[in-house]
Length: 279
Image (cartoon, rainbow, N blue to C red; front, side, top):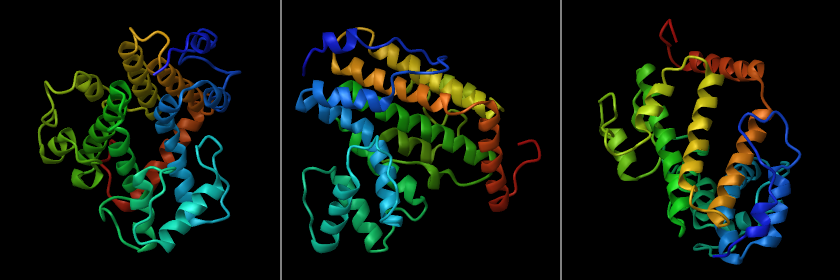
């Protein structure tokens, strides 16, 4: 893995409180394509697979769909993948992550990988498992941490709604299994995760906008702490990319928009289950 002194030294300083950015994820992606070694580019691609997941689902639902350009793969490349799965019993193409083939095959065969999960969550589960096996320890731990955080939040939300959490928990890790089986307030995780108490406190936040900000602040601090001794390495580049993505997402929202999204989610839930009066 390389050392990227010039690249990192030239990056603009960013903060989660930034209200505008002149340097975007798309800008950074173009620069990284030119600057990184093949090995390091493969690690960074794990981040961009998030957008490819969305693009793949869009194409499976509508071959004419417009795709997010932040993904690694073009529409033509993803169409090739889908065609390969249609035409080949055991498709192999090293350009694509293995879980793409697993997911597309299930969709084309009208077979669910997990009947308790939405298609988005089935794909997300495969994605987290794949990324958590990254050859870089820091990047693998980042994906594992996000999986754990999402599962904790899902389990607690299910409890509030008196729903079975099993259907909401992603992945097959030891932590995922512990959450599935636990009825305790701490989900059986005390002593296992150093960020557990912080997450449990955040779940008490009633305002969705504030809750999401606190979650991103926790992620931001995790990145800072875990890259403290990484100065001009791929770890620092990956952390910067994630942080830049966070800022872009928050700039695209405002408190009113956050409230609107929250209310639309609640309205949808009300149609499915009876919510507690004070929810």
